[in-house]
Length: 436
Ligand SMILES: [Mn+2]
Image (cartoon, rainbow, N blue to C red; front, side):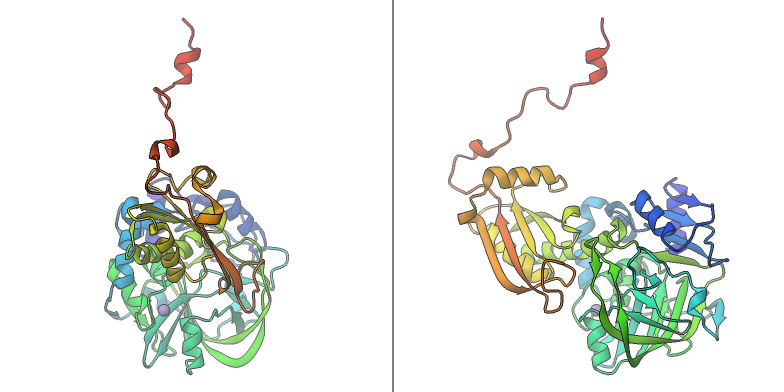
């Protein structure tokens, strides 16, 4: 399924909100996406960019992500963990839809970049996936926001992961995909080990096929809406501020400038916008990490489920539900979670009777099952997320902590189990007030 087919699928189910009134890419689109979050929205008329449509909040929740992976929601993490291990082939097609329109004199000022907030460093694209090649490690696909500098140049935030390494090793050619097939949106959000291609994972998920970019022959999804072909230059430019997953402004950094060489697109293109700190951002970013934690912690104890919680920005806080068999299962799960997700800051381990989708229940477990001198693991001086304003955002040094909120073994469990009142949950207000 390609990007517009996914929107059509949402539309058939009555989920897609069509905004036909002209809207501005300066604040207005972002404000609407935020107000309607996580509902998917298609903007038919953007004031500054005639001819474009813009879509946001697309893969905005777990059920939509499960649909992309072809499973029910309860199998989402399991399937995602399988995808992380998958090795798919990159197959090419001729005459790809993503090259229906070829712009040889590219002007980034004609592409609907967004201004999200008042302090934004410039107009941004946020659903942009960079494809690059390394002779030893193959093809990599990863999300990077890009800020427009002028008609030919932009600057992206290249966090020190695979693409960063490729550039250090000499890679300069880049293809930036916007409006990718959902399986590619999901695969590019994963962090398989170096040398495992996210492109192969996308084709494993639902058979995505690729086109070769005209300028450099890099593989991009054949049915992508827009492809920006360019090069990383030797120039650096300020990047930021930008509202990131924490909902706070990320700091300004000097980043490498990309020069655009050619733009290709489908006819009547749809530009994808990911709202920073919105549900789509957090779902795409966080769910693959939940799967990584599930996989790693399952090596040391029986893990039933994992969530990166909304209050923890879908990134910094994990809750792990286990079936406890040994006294140190909680501690083992905590250590495994930090190993699986390097940006994780706080993790809470709970028993199987706790609903990990309910923050109140998780807090209740902390309130009634924890003694901090026994159950808290503190890990100062660790390298964590660059997004956390309370940490050192340059060195990324932070204090991590794990909390084992499981019931100790060898105690009277009855003391810890939530008491139930017979008939609770079955009361119908209408029947009580109906009179008679
Ligand atoms: Mn990678």
